[in-house]
Image (tube, rainbow, N blue to C red; front, side, top):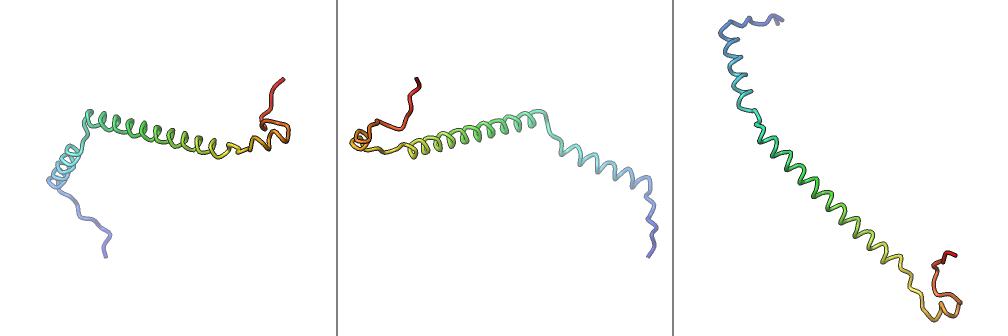
Length: 89
């Protein structure tokens, strides 16, 4: 097995450059495409933030409902206080 590579002719090199130029030109992005992608990405980010905020509000609401103590007013009066809250003096 020989480690020598075949020499390319001038015509082969020119053809190869043309093929690479054509491939590069067809795959280019325009500035408008770039702007559209940025706008779409910003809208998606805003939607994710909104969903996170809503989820956080729901969790907080559930937590406050969960923590609300159910004290029988008769028992509270019998014990001598109206609730566990403290008052600042």
